[in-house]
Image: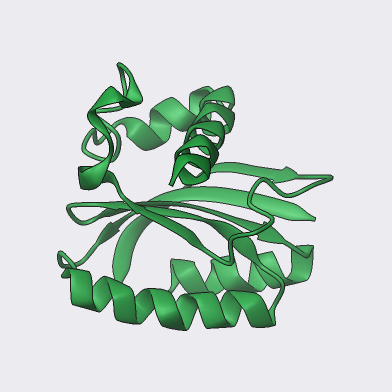
Length: 141
């Protein structure tokens, strides 16, 4: 299995209705190709982790890189994995603007710092921490 985490910038800010419509389409496709993952969105910026069979992930990621919805697609982590981080999520989703206030120090800049992709790429353990944090949030929901 393969996991890819990337950051990108939407060409326009998406409304909640647009996000709901897109998520329904994306989740359906992910289910069909045995892909799981997490998508975070804040004010026009995305960070997403996709995981699943290598061929499916590479095909999806190539589509993502050429999708006119967004630009500046930057890979921050690509790795072979033995087990999924998001086994129950065809696409877990969180509006980062709506995170709980007690999430902890250092996360208020998530997706608003233009250097975030570089920070994650230089410290891949941050992706693991990010994954853990959002799995914890989901388990409390």
